[in-house]
Length: 303
Image 1: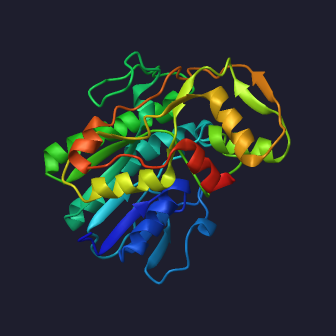
Image 2: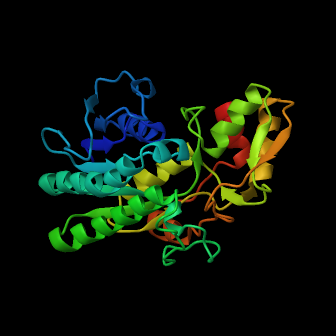
């Protein structure tokens, strides 16, 4: 990749740990910075090229020596986690992003900041393009995550303009795969946990709301393509195969061989009705598109 040493914030989390492993597989030395509030050292390989620094990214990034790449992945990403730590989530999006940008500035490194499709809120544009500014409730319960990421994008763009740092922003749509915590509250691991236990799969609202689910291996390939480019972003990374929540539930039941029924529960506040990325830009500037269909990805990860 032309990168010898990289720092990954949030590297012990679900997505961050896959990024760390992919970099190590490419011969890149990795410094994983994580406070282990939602991540786990069990997610990381025993590899001589890996250094783990336990630290809160909002306070400091104690990474010694130079790095060629900074991947800022740190942030509670599931409703269970960000609703339990609302202020901390906002601080991670603000101060944590600033610390990652400062580290890149000191090292003369490229920095890729992980944003989210949640910056589009409950979108009135469909599918969502990077030019869409979003429809977000700034004071609702989900706003702590949505606005943390929106602020992080603003910080990244401002830092690039003021200091000339080589920055990139990716907007990550729903991602699933191995090493998701069963109790983290996100759609796929919740359904898998319930199906394996023979419990009813809880569908919020009527279940006709849609999601676009990308397997983690595809997503990591997109992230590394962004890291190897000079594009500032934002760039959508996600799978444009749009499915309803009800269909996801049915496919999880099939993959796990479960006989669990479905149970409808109250809709979540500010839950987006539709979610589908326009990935034209990712194809043009990164040569990237997802390769793993949903059924195959679910079997690979949870079958």
